Length: 477
Image 1 (cartoon, rainbow, N blue to C red):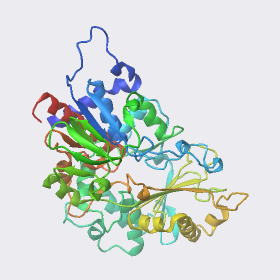
Image 2 (image 1 turned 60 degrees about the vertical axis):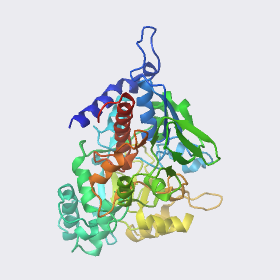
Image 3 (image 1 turned 45 degrees about the vertical axis):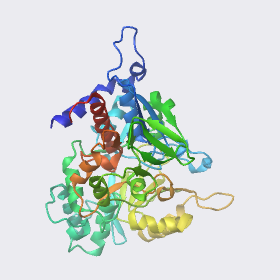
Image 4 (image 1 turned 90 degrees about the vertical axis):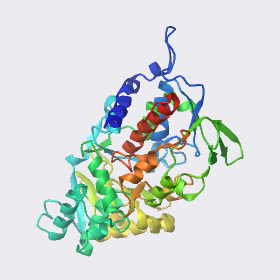
């Protein structure tokens, strides 16, 4: 409990930096010096939310930091369509369209508080209407209220955080449900948490949900692309980022730690924070010398990260409902967000997110995946998907945008999820410092229930910087 309170103090202490970050980067003449006196350098691998926030915290305390980013842009799995080059103008809506993280989970979560302090206007998705698909029929919760399959799924979801059964998958925990019910459950739970219900562990998920401390609101930002928000919020540390610097090995057998990039260049630092996705840690593309401790590798073996595809489709007509927020239950498009809700009069865009086995199947099809998605929408909405899909007036090609995170070299998927045998102890194992020189951060290492989200990444940054500061000062954890 003391550790949790200490972390909260770090977060609250930085809140002033949300408004005036320049105050944290400068010292008055009579300033007694840095809060944390340290002659060494901390290297942070990854310029996503966790890496940037960790750098922000450490530099505010006077610690010298460098940020090494493998790709050519900042933000990690935060990526906005407007910020990309070579995108046809007609494919961009008049509201933010996100290719990665797009929903704020919890108005009082770390991310929710940042948006609040920055005075960003948000849309509460609960004010919209959720639609649910069972078989090929779509209706609201009220219309499905007497359907036993619908009720079985919603009751299962409601009781998930209190699950105390065997270490099995969600599908096994939901034994007895019909196929149409399982398809909806896979959409609302399996796909929602980054995979499918035949892989997602019930125990690990339940423990994470129980650990969450924020409210259950789901918000979207009205007019600001997330990538711009990140660049603005962390502008003071952006000069510390070295783009196109992919680290392939870390030798932490001595001080300083020696990192080698893919071009053979050696970079030295005294402590290293690694924020890369679980998929990269498990792929072997980042080698550690000595190897990671058995407690870490064992924990990693019980945590997965599956394929992920985001598909953005524009239509000439909104045929699913102007006030609809989510459409749940489709097999080819398990998570459909009505991206323009309460943001534009041109409310005709679906933001579709697919994880797990289905994402891998669609990824293998390339651009043709759009035809599979449209075919299913046609079966549910009487052919309106193909009828109203926007096409280029010159080529008659469907206007769409596909972000295949599976094919991103330095990400390779969506976000972490627990296998059946996993528990919160595995997240805790990943969060432990190694030799007071190597520290892991990122959403997969969050121990407060927000894995798989930007909230989790931010919380991991607060936790890891506390550990780094303790290692510098020689204080006990």
